[in-house]
Length: 100
Image (cartoon, rainbow, N blue to C red; front, side, top):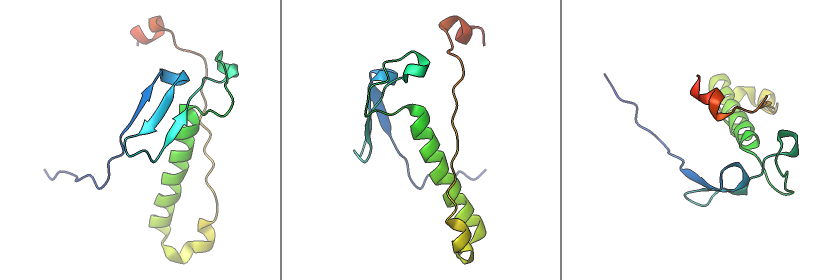
């Protein structure tokens, strides 16, 4: 079986979990994280969440895939901006995680 060769690998790490700091290994991304007040967190100003980061990354990948599939002749259609919504409902407890 043929193996797939990775063209690019992004590496990142977080210290402090959802109320911490995340950074890409190459320092191209550096963000402070905070659980929103709606989820019972501090909701610190000028921070983001993993859900925000995932939504932006997904939108970028979706737009790139659409461009790849449609080709450059669809340039005007490519101006449409994908806007995925990443939702989080409820809060899992350790007991919930253990039972799954």
